[in-house]
Image 1 (spheres, rainbow, N blue to C red):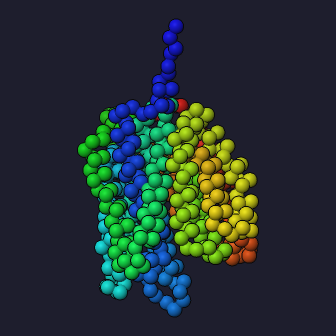
Image 2: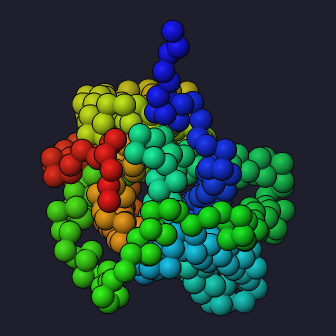
Image 3: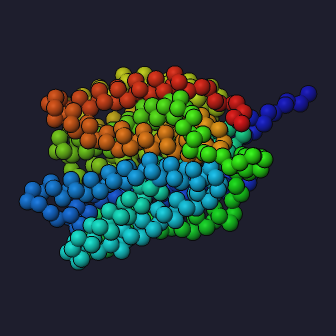
Length: 437
């Protein structure tokens, strides 16, 4: 008697051979784009010294440098709308190629930008332009690439395929952190200020050959080809169709808030809190970002498979009580034991339940929308949530500490974000294992 093996069981072992190339290419592109976007934050102090030497107070250059980092988040909703609509009209592959080119051009501008000492205000102007361009590109990238991954999968493996989005984001941050740490230790301060930082940004130009590989070697997704082939009396007004799905947009934005606020707080703010409030050395920030990426690199695929088995809603929900119960004690432990090993252990442990909620969170976002507005719907929901709450998470957290005088107060900001995500989860339908269109 033979045992029948289901297609679901086979697909859980590995994707189809043709799709392995697609996953690898998309992941490499994603990793380079997130590397490009976030490596600036790891060099913010150096960039402040080279490009924004203004004011009498030593904090003014750093604040200006961080403000430029924030401009990338401001541009993301615009990029989400423009590039997302382009992906829904012209195809996921074309939009993915566009975002990679834009991100690479941004990296090139960083690599060749003259410093303030070399060209005065021209240097900061080039840096700001590069940052705006990268924010615009990444705004469209997240929805396009996640939609592309999801549409390569079948109905039983969409969570697993989308998990590679989280893996690749973490890979980009991980590589960026290692490279910044290695060059900072290997080069003299003078060499780092002269050309080392330019080399770090120049790595992002590798996005161009990746984009050309995607253009020439990957097929457009079947879902988009099928939707484009349908006879229609007139061209679809995709913007109007997008606005006709307010429940899905609201659910997506709330879910993103509940995922991105903990990400920025755990992966970035805790380290900055340890540096600014507890007096730990500056390099702690980079090490915390590297350590926080490890659970996502190791567990993202399993989190995706789990969401395919038990459903998106259950998979998003079950880690939330763990985060709610753990986040306040985490701040207490760090504040009472200001030690680097304690900080890294806390960041690593908190990143485990965080991984298990952000993977199905990303998977459900494109599943909320019909194929005609899938990339634009996901992009807009994601980027609005990130721009309003995730990008300003560290600002709000620092403000809570200042207003209350309580170094544990930022935990309440995470509480609020998770509660909003629970509202979004209530609005969202179960999508795992179902045909979408």
